[in-house]
Length: 169
Image 1: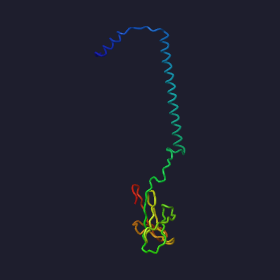
Image 2: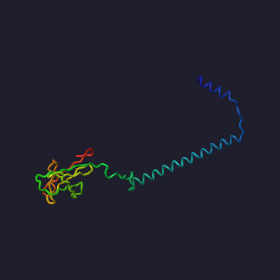
Image 3: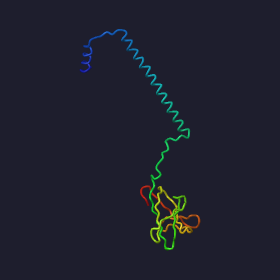
C-alpha cells in the first residue's frame, strides 16, 4: 500500500462506529429493491423503442413511404435570367417570337428594341434547350448568333441554349 491508502484507512478507522437498528436496514434494502425494479422497467422501455424503430425501418424500406419529406421549393429558386436577341437582316419584319423546350414550344412574343432587333428576357432553369425564332408568324429561323445548332427533323435547324448553374448565359 502506498501512503495515501494508509492515511485513508486510518481516517476511516477513526470514525465513530454507529449501530443502526433493523428498521433502518430494511428501509435501505427496500429502496435498493425499488431501484432494481425501475431498472427492469427501463429495460422494457429500451425494447419498446428498439421494436418501434424496427417497425419504422421495415415500413420505410418495404413500402412506398418516402425517406425524406418532399420539400416545396420556391419556383424562382435556381432560375437564371437569359436575354435572347434576334437581329434581322431586313427591316421589313413585323413580329418575332421565340419557342423552345423552355416554353414547351409555346411561342413567346419578343419586344422590338430597334428597327431590326427584338429581345426577350426569360427565366429558365440550368440545362440544355432547343429553340427557334418564328418570324412574322410563318417562318422558323435558327438563332444566327448561336454556334450550337442541331437538325429539327423537318429539314431545318434548331439552336441550342446551354444555361449553366452559376451565371446567366
